[in-house]
Image 1 (cartoon, rainbow, N blue to C red):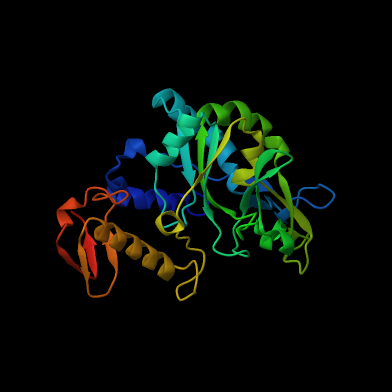
Image 2 (cartoon, rainbow, N blue to C red):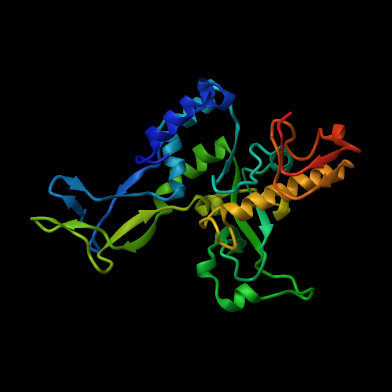
Length: 308
């Protein structure tokens, strides 16, 4: 969570009885904040008595796991050895995916990453690649047009392994490798940062300061055995980054992808789909298309929500 939404998020889970998970099995922890500084390295004051602060990026999950006590809770109280971490904006994510986790364990990986092939050369996702022989993610904004459009002899994108923020870690890797090296992973972002001029808070028109942040994939080069698991976009990646009505990566496109996936599952077991509309199968009924044999030979009329 963040300092802005932590209380509201925790209260919502409590109101919903932790969605059946049980309070003891849900651990909330906040994203960290770091002071903003001038180009000369001096701390910026937002008011006479308040330091200007900014979130430390999604890579801040690592120190936050330690400072919140979550890492100790997993290791000492629960005997947890592995983590599956993913972004919240993917409507088709498969929590604790046994296929992905099993692959990483079979390969002896200390860190793993799910990937789906880019839909086109200029899709706004980072790509999984090797830099100086080490695994990394190169952001779409850092790739030249020539690199983005480069293809192999079969016409396939050379840099096409899209990063979907879906990762595996061993807890040993986080504690013994990642956390001791966090100090070397910060990026500088030049931003417009409100500052106190001695009388009032000023909102600048141009970049006047620096925010420090880390990215969750910055730790990939630290891995001694990194694995990539390529998945089908239609089954695993429906991001929600834009507002309703947007032609891509919106609630509408995510809803459509969920519906299409569920209809595919039903057709695969011999069900007939009737009429048009949204089809949703509760994950309590089927995690990945299994357990739907009872619908063989049946006609499923849309719209529908199969919850039992």
